[in-house]
Image 1 (cartoon, rainbow, N blue to C red):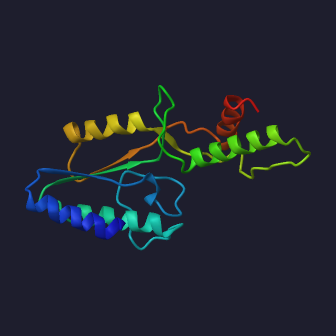
Image 2: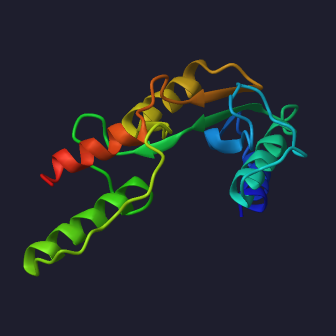
Image 3: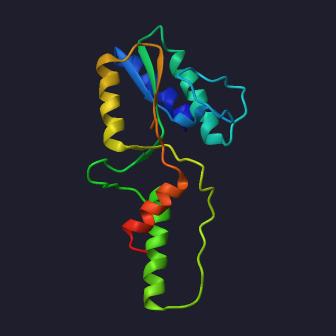
Length: 175
């Protein structure tokens, strides 16, 4: 879907004579690299999963249309809720973890036991979280001011560690 869907949208964009095409990809097209750059990564590199690989291939496909219209690639990291309200309309990723912890809290309140629940994580690893409103603002700026044939990473320059994120969840859920 990431490649074929993008191909279909690009063909349609050509039919309706658009001037600028902004492709929203993911910051995780870097494969097994540790440091990301604002360039296209090789399609032949090693990837962690097929999602990353197909998103990278879609980026190359988008850039192949540079002679038909202005193209830009925007790569947001892990999108979370609104930076002001915290509101999010999803149960995936971070919110799935939060929801699971809420359920476990309710379960243990109804039926107390000595059962221990463990969440296994690398405390020092980071999750590059970016608020949805920030991503939307950057996309609008890209539409107005983005340089054609350019890749932009929409990432958090100071991402929280997993420990910081988990501590915030524990505090907000009053565990």
